[in-house]
Length: 478
Ligand SMILES: *[C@@H]1O[C@H](CO)[C@@H](O)[C@H](O)[C@H]1NC(C)=O
Ligand SMILES: *[C@@H]1O[C@H](CO)[C@@H](O)[C@H](O)[C@H]1NC(C)=O
Ligand SMILES: *[C@@H]1O[C@H](CO)[C@@H](O)[C@H](O)[C@H]1NC(C)=O
Ligand SMILES: *[C@@H]1O[C@H](CO)[C@@H](O)[C@H](O)[C@H]1NC(C)=O
Ligand SMILES: *[C@@H]1O[C@H](CO)[C@@H](O)[C@H](O)[C@H]1NC(C)=O
Ligand SMILES: *[C@@H]1O[C@H](CO)[C@@H](O)[C@H](O)[C@H]1NC(C)=O
Image 1 (cartoon, rainbow, N blue to C red):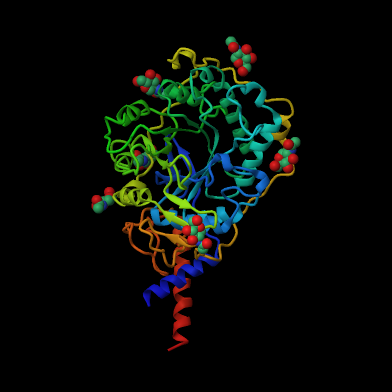
Image 2 (cartoon, protein in one colour; image 1 turned 120 degrees about the horizontal axis):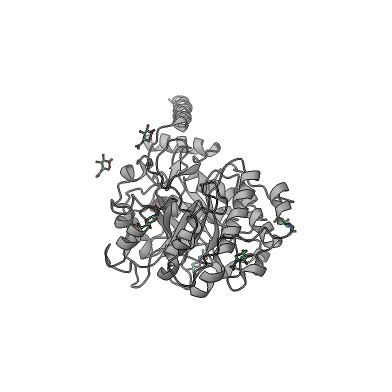
């Protein structure tokens, strides 16, 4: 009976478009704009088919098929993630249903503006010639397509474009140029300020120089648009049953301890040895690292040829959990979410360092802080907006049940797999449920951390309304 009421109340939620609270940056923290609580990213990379599968001609990208997103959102919600990173999107496709589904379950989206196709990213071997107005037009189109979803958390201007010593000499000024253009575009054409950052390769020689190069200010204050709002790194140094010291996490944490912007792992999860045991999770979200880092995203949701998957997805839409999914869930379940997400953002704002060649320590890394000029034609796009501009908006998520067949890692078919829409002041969190538990039609997929703030008044009212409606419904049968 209680379950039935709970289910009906949740169904009532589905009929309404709820929205996560937007996230802002304060100092080196991601912060819920309403509650002021810090947000630690518990994420997964999400690019089914892999980068090589990105093909706009197919009319599909990772966020264009609501049925697929519903299946994957249900599996992610059960796991406890609150963020996805999507590498390649087609700005001209409709992402409303997928964005709305992820929003409904309290999952934020980190969107890369580039694609592996020619002309749709900065070519690290020829940054000067690939930085042009046609390239920028497409990156601005991605901003237009995603700027109106409240769960769009940030944009990545680039991913691993600096990936060795030669590229570190030539690419950095262009990464700042793209960052500047994106930030200027967002400032003019988005009602909300959406952060822009860079995702660095796991290449120690250039990591700290990349961070300093991207976080420093050329103008002497934080408003320099070519300065990143956040810095992320793809980190694969914790392999197997490692430790804080052996993995080098201790050195990373010390290195970034005085960062002026949020720092997090935009990818993690070394897969040698495999299957993975994810013992880095309690350390990444433990007392040594959370004061400095803002969490991370596991690479990656779907099983691809590189063997980093949590879930195998078949071409007919069916899916099966891998043991890595169970292991990750077990580790997520050990986290004290109340403590993790309930922290107030610190007041210790580190002033951005002034750009100077003295910040750069590796021979050959660019010390040129004269940022390339906006290419011909592109300032007009920044001033007036691109045309036609794609428009994204939240839509009602009316179906919550997963229709595809999904199997547990032991082969058992999961019955009643569904998303559980959350109220508008909640982000998703680990459920504490045992990985081997079969879901039932009314099983709550995840516990949520209740936060105070304006939003909760609205959701409490909705609950009340739901209870009243249900009570009326039941009394009509008595
Ligand atoms: C700019 O992007 C929009 C949206 O993707 C597209 O319709 C338009 O053709 C592009 N313009 C140019 C000049 O590439
Ligand atoms: C879908 O594909 C998988 C893997 O090829 C297969 O095991 C399964 O039987 C198929 N399911 C349906 C409903 O066709
Ligand atoms: C989790 O953290 C909260 C807040 O710090 C604390 O009150 C609670 O006892 C912790 N729970 C566990 C199981 O450690
Ligand atoms: C941050 O500073 C404000 C104003 O100085 C103060 O009211 C608040 O308590 C401080 N918060 C923390 C977590 O120190
Ligand atoms: C961070 O610490 C390093 C090493 O102690 C120092 O050189 C650098 O100036 C500091 N940066 C900031 C922004 O305070
Ligand atoms: C620094 O970069 C600017 C534009 O990005 C370029 O015009 C200038 O020649 C570069 N300076 C040096 C010393 O390479």
